[in-house]
Image (tube, rainbow, N blue to C red; front, side, top):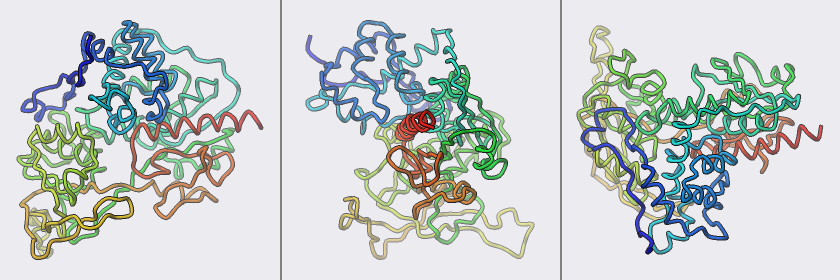
Amino acid sequence: MPIQPKKHPMPSQDPKVRAHNFKEVATGYTEEIAVAEAERCLNCKNKPCVSGCPVNIDIPAFIQKIKERDYEGAYKKIAEFSSLPAVCGRVCPQETQCESKCTLGIKFEPVGIGRLERFVADRHNDTCAETPVKPQPNGHKVAIVGSGPSGLTCAGDLAKKGYYVSIFEALHTAGGVLVYGIPEFRLPKSIVAKEVDGLKALGVDVETNVVIGKTLTVDELFEDGYEAVFIGSGAGLPNFMNIPGESLKGVYSANEFLTRSNLMKAYRDHSDTPIMKGGKVAVVGGGNVAMDAARTALRLGADKVYIVYRRSMTELPARKEEVEHAEEEGIDFRLLCNPVEILGYHNPDDKRDPKNGTVTGIKCIKMELGAPDERGRRRPVPVPDSEFTLDVDTVVMSIGTSPNPLIKATVKGLEVNSHGGIIVNEDGLTSREGIYAGGDAVTGASTVISAMGAGKIAAKAIDEYIMKK
């Protein structure tokens, strides 16, 4: 049978319908579609796709199980390497990782590896009532700071080896960026909760509302008997452009905007969480977080949503699928544009005026691409006399984040780089013995699967460290 040249399309809600609800956009492969897509896999002996996966899932092996319709076997194969398969199947940038290495992709479209991973994980969650078997305790304790993807992965790998693992999460719900940063329509909260429950079944203790550096210090964790600490506190400090008007009412960081919608449940009908509920919105930035913020604003009732990005569509860093979904939903992309000022209504002498200090527009300048920068991307430069104004009521700044500064301020002897990222060696070890780190706390904002890879590496190193003591 000849190979189908293109991936089987992912079933999804109609754009006109989904733009006004928070239900998951992609509805997932059916069994027959999944088997047909699995049949496209060439089952290469050298497995190039595995080299593109930060957690090294044996991709051909789990796809072979799908061909055999052994879906639980496929899940178990994935679970040998990943603690969050249902999450990764939804939010990983497979097109630049595993799928970019797919041999089939040389001539045709690569195998839809991420879509198959999601199918397998969802099938397991829907049909399997078994709970993970709690391993025999080995008598050693490890503390995890942060319950994002790096922390959850590190915790899962250590728990499987019999460690008593405690996760300390600053917010009231476990999941980190998976619950406060990624919208319900891309990653339902129930999926994250299911993955966390699986770790709890392995014996992982999850303590929320604990701010390490305030409620407890890292040194106090060692005093309490923890033999190693993994820091996966993420990159929750938003960056701004430092242009006039950023302090106006109606200007959000993407972190704040998405947290209000996701963790504070503004996406629910009749929610009283303070957030924009209409008008025109400009989202500044071009990454996945910018797409999430723009599409969230649309669903919250915005009349018009703009993406303002200083480079062209070719350089847009967001996943191709997310950009396509945003375009289908009616997001207006204003490319090769850069904000220079946020405009607002100012009347500081009249404290009773409800419009005092609120956003009325965003002034931008047109850009063109010049010489390449240090990363090889053509540097955007302003076009003289090209300023224009977009009339908006809300501005969301989505130009990146930096690592949480609280950890470095409270852990003595912890070395950080100029961007605030914790400095680690190839095993995730910091400048302090027994303290490891990974994910966005080290790299700055990156992908979920990269953070998971760092958590996996650190778990292996922590195990070796403790066993040698």
